[in-house]
Image (cartoon, rainbow, N blue to C red):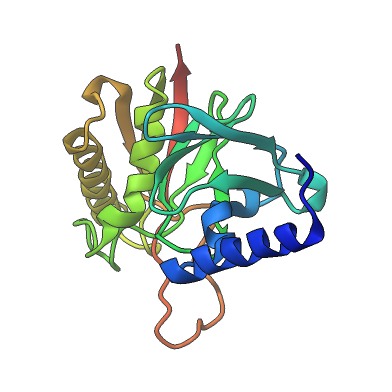
Length: 244
């Protein structure tokens, strides 16, 4: 049966009337809102952009996307197809780097969005020296500073995701001075970090520490006056000692 132009017009009017009567635009019923995750990936030590394999899985463990970051474009990556209101795991893989898993939650939205998230990947080879991105201690203190748990969770998660790796914790004093006092301070700092990792699920057998009585030769205290409110805190590191 042929449909003439008048009948086509009537059907079109009925189609539009149907969607208007529901109060929902036709395009929002026909299309599914998606979200893109984008950003850059850098080496945690050198801060150089990296080419890294990026995999995204939903909370059921199903892969929903994968790509590679581009070191020649400042470590840029882009993955789309994520759904608002869902949880995902972002996995970062690269030879001679720690495996990293990050949890993300996509907030509810009815509009296309691009969420920006940069990542750092940590080198994995014997004697790799990885600094804590934020000093975990206050000046001349050995107790973890307020809020340290939040930024220490990154290294904790790295150790959880790489159970074959054993590390050594290194802590340096805040200033040159009495070596015995410095050694006492840094020993207690090392113990604070070790206890934190053990409390958060890391096997004590994978952890050792080395306290230092002199300031860090690779990152010494500044010789010039620093900006007001900024203080030099002796650096802390984890060093890869064994890869099974």
